Length: 496
Image (cartoon, rainbow, N blue to C red):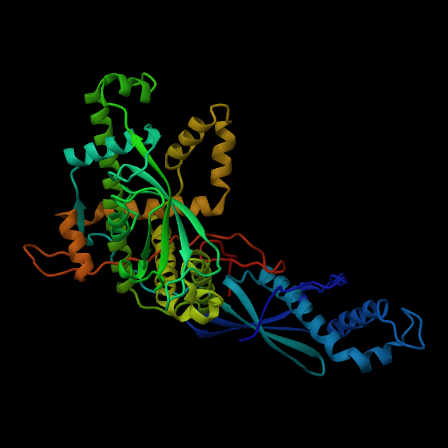
C-alpha cells in the first residue's frame, strides 16, 4: 500500500533546508477521491542530505578496529548504506511533502501515502498518493420525507419512574428469603465441570443483582425468587441469552437484602427535591416532563437516522480510501475493546481480522461527513453564540465560578466539539425543511425491526428501512510530520 508520511524523525532531524522554488510538483488525478503527487528535487539536495545522514550515523557506529565515531564513511556506506538510506528517504519525503503542500496549497484529507522514489541524473522524484474530498453534485436535501415517531408519556410510566426514585432512597434490610423483586441478592458464580457438573478449581465471581432490574435475565430472576440464604442451583445463561457463553455454572446465594421504600407523599417530595417542590402532584408533573423530554430526544434520533440514510443512499461518489480504512479500523478497535471481555470468541482477535465487517458502516460515516460538509458550505452555516449557549449554561451550573468568555473560547477552539455542534446544526436545518409523517413510536419500532422503505407515502402501509449505524466524524486537527492526519472537517488549503 505504501508508507504513511510522517512515521518518525531521526536524531539528525533534517536540519538542512530545501528551497521551495527548487521543488517541482506534479498532481495527477487517479479517481475522484485520490490523486497522485510527484515531487522532484535536485539530486544535489538529496545527496547533500543523505551525506549528512551518513555523518550522523558515523558518530554512533562502533566497529572492531575503530574507535566510536571514527569508522570510515565508505565502510559505513558498504555495511549499512541501504538501511541508512531507507531511513533517510522516509524523513526526506516527509520534509519535502510538507514544503510542497504548503507552497502549492494542496488540499488533502487523511494521511498521505509515500509510494516510491526514483533517482535520475539531475533529480530525485518522490511519488505520493493523497485522498481528497471528491467533487460531486449535491442532491436535494430539502423536503425529504421522513417519519416522526411520537410517544406520549403515560401515567403508568410516571408511576414506574417514581418507584425507581423511591428505590434509590430505600432502606436496606437483611432477610433470609427472596420474597419479591425489590430485593438485592448477592450470589457466587462457581465454575463447573460441564460433564459431571462438579465444582472445579477456578475463579469464583461474586456479584449483586437487583431483581427488579431489566438487566437481570428472566430465567435467573425466576430461579432466585423464593430461594433462601445458602441455596444453590445450576444455571446456564445461554438458555436465556443466546449470545452468552453456553456453560453451566453453580449459583450460590450469599446474601439477601430487602429494599424498604419510603411512602410516596408530600413529605417525601419536599425532602427529595430539597424544598424545590412541595406536593406529589408537582412531582408527578415534573417526572412527566422529564420522561417526555427523553422520548422527544429518541424521536429526534430516529429522524436523524432517516435523514442520514436517505442522503447517503442518494449520493454516489468515490470515497477517500485512507480515511475509509482508518474509520473502519477505529470502529473495529472500539468494538473489540468493548466486547472482548464479555465474548470469549473475540479475545485475541486483531482489528484487521474483523475490519471487513465494519467497512459498510465506515462507508456510511465517511460519505455522510463529506455530504454534511458540502451542505454546510452551500448554506453558509456557521457556529453562532446561541449554538453554544446550552453547553455554557450546563458548565455554569456545574461550576458557577467558571469564566463564561473562557468557556466560549474553549468550545469554539475545540475541533470535536465544534464538529458535533455543526452536525447538530445541519441536521436541525435539514429536518426543519423535511416533510414529516407522525407515527406511533411502537408502530415505528415494529416497522424498523421488520425493515421498511426509506420514506413515508400518504396512506401507505408499506415498510421503511432505517439507518441504524452512523457516528459523528470527529475532526482531528493534526499535522503530517508529527505522524498526524487531516480529516474531512479539518483540511489544508489547495490550489492545483
